[in-house]
Length: 271
Image 1 (cartoon, rainbow, N blue to C red):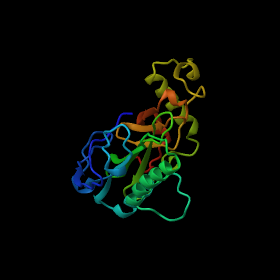
Image 2 (image 1 turned 180 degrees about the vertical axis):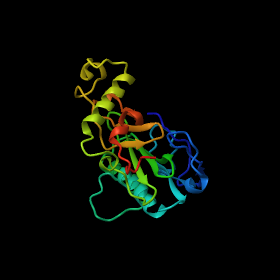
Image 3 (image 1 turned 120 degrees about the vertical axis):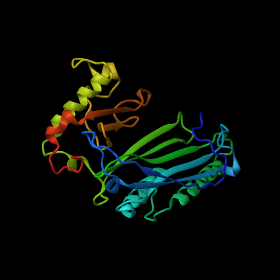
Image 4 (image 1 turned 90 degrees about the vertical axis):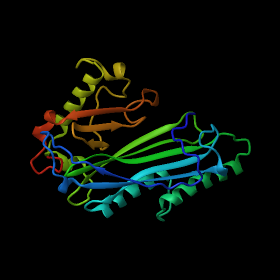
């Protein structure tokens, strides 16, 4: 199993600060620096089982790399949402109402592996999870943020997951699909997604997506895992979501010009 990260530390927390440069809107005009100034602080937490080397095939470790806003409007509510989502990714089986910290999630991962070993004396594989949270795009109106996770817990193969979060900068709230489009948008949006997906796979409108693309159904529809980007809206489909694991992941980016008639003037992404 290939390891994806390189630090060899038991616990490491590092900080680096970078700024989102003045962005451009869809017309290409510069957005003023005074209104688009946004800074993130990157943090890294790495914990290993018995000081093992993460580059070792059987090392059990958890690494969480994520960025939080260090300067920007509504940073507290946005950072809280980001942190909560990272914790949920790191501790998906949480049963108690107690809210863990990111550090406690890492400790729990190592402890659960140790408990598993105590009950399975002959087990000799390592576990790993690598979580990364980072900004993907921002302008004066929105921030798009991604949280990815690659993990192996002793099954047949590693698994992965990627989730996008989109925030309104004016209030720090998450943006959902109904917030973006006019009522009755569904057919128009799905038609655009199907068209762009077929184009990306060099498929004709008549080609069957089950046979030609390996999907579960002969259509692809919008989901709630989307990224608001400069070039359009990207819809991302994780393993098993619309196709078997062997088919991998899928993404479709729909250019704004294909769906501009279902984006109202008051849409949070109408920039």
